[in-house]
Length: 317
Image 1 (cartoon, one colour):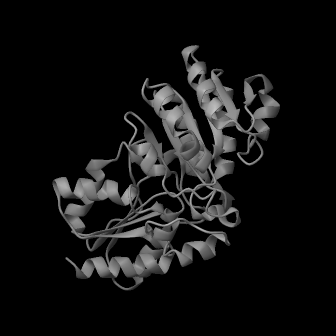
Image 2 (tube, one colour; image 1 turned 180 degrees about the horizontal axis):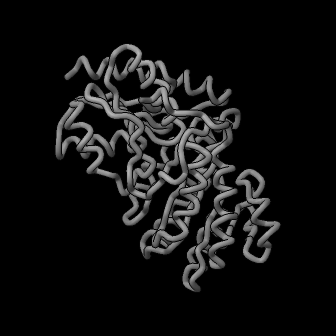
């Protein structure tokens, strides 16, 4: 039952990255951290202090950082590039495509401050298209962890995962509710079993989905909540098994509904088990400046919207 899920604290997911890369670097001497003038924002202070010789400050030159990272892999290094999600993808898409993805370089593109919850910095920094941009690149693995524990686990796991990875996380303090031992790349995490509706979510929206699931359960709805932390490769087996049982779904993501998690789920459903789907995400729009939680509510990404979407989609069965 979802009511049994316990919040063990509150911490930003970017701190999970900072703690994860430090622990991973202690185990693997080939890990190198690069940043584009945002070491503090990406929580790299511990890494810089302990491994100064394995830290590269590239300055505000993100495209150059990607080129350096690609080159480092030739010598056997495992480079983790770090900057905001907007600058990790939109600003450097050509360099990622040509220098990293095309040749399958073992670069870990670690992107913080993703989505609306970047908050006051506004639309120019709140990228809502990055999951789509990255998952369309051949061979690119895309991971969007749900909380501090899962971000730390993902940061460590990608060190042993061969090939380019896009790891997306956020800025705000968020509930901690996962067990990091449960994280496996490409394997969905199921929080509850149900027969009436499935809620698929990623990133910060997983907690919102759990909150919505609790409300639905109190209303007598049998709800299945599944964390799709790995958008690509998608756990199609878990998706198909769930939608065959519930016959409808809601997808929830802090991203444009065009090109993100919702599209990935819909593609699987269209091929294997066509069902009605409702989408929670931004609808073909940019964000704006504001408080993170207020922005989620304004753009329809809050708990109540997930509950309403679940009730709507069940009526469409």
